[in-house]
Image (cartoon, rainbow, N blue to C red; front, side, top):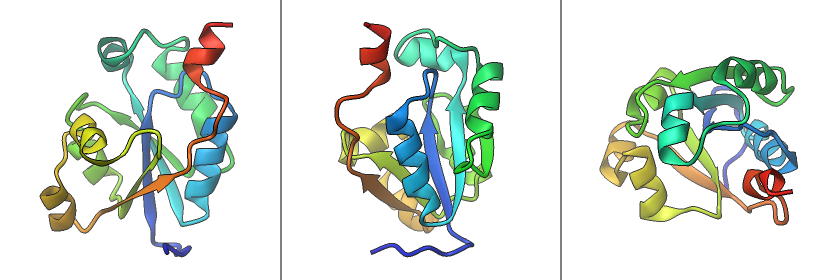
Length: 140
């Protein structure tokens, strides 16, 4: 089991365009292991990948960056290729909800198990917060 260490750097990636309790739970969980670095998708990548964000990147930087569980916000300028952002974050761990795991999640980041091993990075999953999602909130 992963333990808190101040030198752990927990990389959390996403668009976070409608911050909700599931995101806060994810950030809080990440903080229990070390420093939390949130990598935000650009507006262009988010639109290509999923949909146009409700809040532009500038606003998301402020909203996510002021969260007490977040130590640093960076921008995923590489789009599908998350490797530059992961390296910029000096990540020791990548954290994601367990609604998306394994090869499909690694493919989304454009990383491989070998690349993670070469860079001494572990992937950890947090149980998904049921009943809340940006998609559900947008459809209200």
